Amino acid sequence: MVFKMAVNSIKMLISEENLIQNIKYLEKKYAKKILPVLKANAYGHSIEMVSEILYDNGYREFAVARLNEAEKILQNKKVTDSRILVFESIGREFFDVVKSNNTIEISANTLAELKEFIENGISPDRIQLKIDFGFGRNGIIQEDIENLKKYIEKKNLSFKGIYSHLYAVEYDEGAELIEKFTETVKYLGKERFQMIHIQNSVGILLYGNCDMMTHLRPGIYIYGLQEEGFFQEGLKQVFKLEGKIAGVRDVSKSKYLAYNLKTTLSENDFNYAAKIKIGYGEGFSKANEKSCCLINGKSYKILLVTMDNTFIEVDESIKEGDHVALYSDVSKVREDTGLHICEVLPVISSRIVREKI
Image (tube, rainbow, N blue to C red):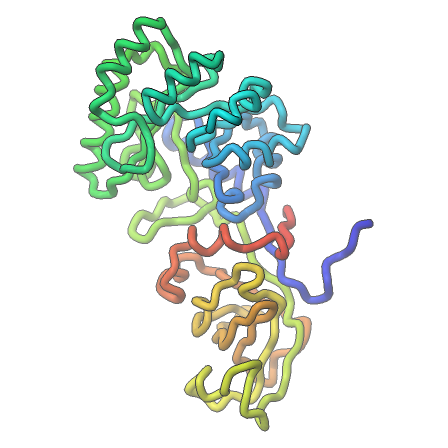
């Protein structure tokens, strides 16, 4: 049985047009293939929806952080001939899953992992080497590169790809990391790798035209999200978090709003409070308190976030059913909440319906 959305619910609208426009913009500007990153539920946009949109528009290669994210994509039988790179290490207990599914590509994050993959019959054209230059999260460390080269040459191995993570945002430091990565690829043998990639979204802005790289690996940029101080023109925001006012109460004679004294919520002696159907139970953090939302295009202050509802200080002009938009300007999210947009969207739960537009 299919149920329609509850009256005056909040939902997340996902623009197919803007998503594809962003990828095509990056492809054209930098003349590189794109490896879209869909980790963390496609940065909160819905990994199932985004992967299907990309597939329908001709894209067949994706990247995720964890194996279960790849498996979630593959629940959609429509996209089973895609190729999905998993960044994080795969435990031995999942080797059979990988070997039985040609769609999944895995990362060798240590030399020992690589040897284990090969010894257990995983084809090198299903493996990408991750190189670590000091980020410390994962990847084959510099001290192992010489032994890695010896092992590759001894086994005469060629791989699906090689990549690293560009973590430094200072231009000179980032350029130095790219140079180290380039030297490492040449040392190991560029011809052994079908894909070579290092630039994340900010890396694309600063170093998008590196000749060595075959692909760019954007995360936030394909969703039209931006880092403070690193604005990429030409990108359009893919999501809208919006809905309708679920109710308005005259609280002029009330001492409390929900569990809180009104005097603790606002310096104003407000008379009206509007309710919307989203709360921290949906991942809408209490950090949003004292930030603003748009109702009928006008800014109003968020007073209180509870588990199932959020209350907004309004005036007598606001009525049940009026349009409300949250995070309409993502550039203000950190200023308003103290949170990066990547800390905000991925935690919006499945109780908030994603709808393609």
